[in-house]
Length: 430
Image (cartoon, rainbow, N blue to C red):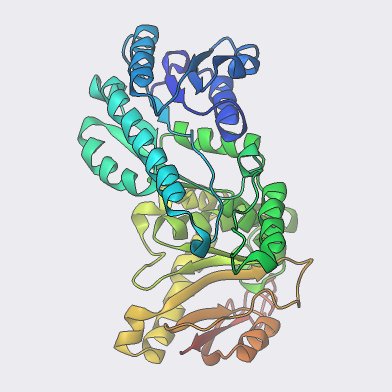
C-alpha cells in the first residue's frame, strides 16, 4: 500500500448518510483524500466542513452522462489516478419471497448491479496498480467480485468483498412490503419488529467504517471482510466461553486478567479463519444464540489463511504453548475419532459445528434448538451441561478424549498433577 496517505485517493459512493458517510469520515481521518458522492452535492456539506481532504461531487449512477462527467472531474482532480473505489450507493427493498413484486425486485437488483459494474468499468483504468508496482483495494458486489477479482489481479488490483450484517443506518427505516392478500400479514408486525430491532441493536456505522478502513489499508491480502456478524458473534461468545475448559486450557500459560483479555482476540482469529475457508455464521433470535458452522468439504486447517485471519498475531502474543495445544494436541486427538465414527460418505457430507453458544443472559430458553437436516453434524461438547443439551437434541457421544492431564484441572485452569479436561465428540445423523 502507498505509504504517503495524503497521496492516496479513495472514491466512495452514497455518502449522504449511514455507512457511506462514516466510510468517508474514516478514510479522511487517516489522511486519505476522499472523493465523496451523493445525488445532491449539498447533502455532503457536513462532510466537507469537517475535513479539508473530503471533496463533494453530485452523482446519479443511473445517468450514464452524469457518470462520464464525474469520471472526467475526478481525473482532473486526481491526475487520473485513484487507489480505492468503494461501491456503497444502493437501495433497500424488504419483502418475503412470496410477496416479491418481480418488476420492483428486478429493478432494484439489476440497477444496483449494473451501477456498480458501470462505476468499476469507468474507474478501473484510474487505479494506481495499472501505473506502478503497487497493490490496492476495490470493494464491490458479491458474485461480481469473484469474476472481477480474477480479471484485474494481473494488474495489481485487489478486489475485496465487504460482507455486512446489521449496521445502524437510515436505509432500514422502511417497513416490510406485504400486499393485502399476503399470507404473512398476520405476522407482518413481528417480522418488522425483528428487522427494526436488528437495526437498533446493530453495529454503529462509525465502528463499522473504522474497522473496514483499517482492514482495507493494512498490508494483508484479503478476499472478504466480515463485519457485524463477526463482531456480534465475538461479543456473544466471549462471555459465554470465559470459563470454558478448552479455552482455559488453551490459555493456561497466561495469568487470569490477560487470559480473559486474550480470549476475545483468539475467538476473533478462529472465527475469521473459519469464514475465510467457507464457514457460515449462524444466529437465532437476534443473536440470542450464534456460532460458526463449517459446511461439507470445507476445513479450518488452511495454513495460507492463518496470517489474514490474524491468528499468527494472536498466537505470538499468547505464546507457542497455545499454538501447540490448539493445532497439534486438540486437532490431532479428534481426527482419529472422526475417521472411526464416519462412513466415507459422511466424511464428505457432514457439517461441523466449530463453535456455538447462547447469550449468557438468554440461556435455557430454547434458542439453540436443532432443526431437521439432511446431513450428519459433528461437534465437540466441552462441559457436562453442553453434552447433556446435545444428547437431548438427538446427538450421540461417539468418543471422548482427555487433554492437559498433569497440567490442568477439569476446568482447564493450571494445576500440577491435574486430571485434565474432557472433550466429548458428538454426532447427529439424519
